[in-house]
Length: 78
Image 1 (tube, rainbow, N blue to C red):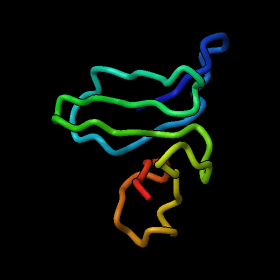
Image 2 (cartoon, one colour; image 1 turned 45 degrees about the horizontal axis):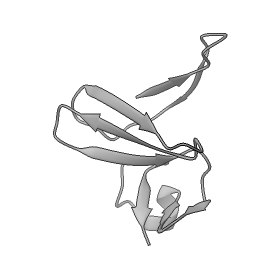
Image 3 (cartoon, rainbow, N blue to C red; image 1 turned 30 degrees about the vertical axis):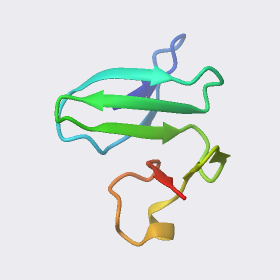
């Protein structure tokens, strides 16, 4: 999944974690959390700021979790 600047068209970030095409992305009203749904049957939650707590969710770097996730910005439950 890729995030682009709407005005310039420049790629801002890329995210890995799905094993099939992504068919939907939905942002929270405050823009801090978003979800992506894939053809592989998975739903992934993502945050825009690494380390920021969002309700019961906190975004962490892979080093903080060992090697248990494949994406540096995947949201994990506390």
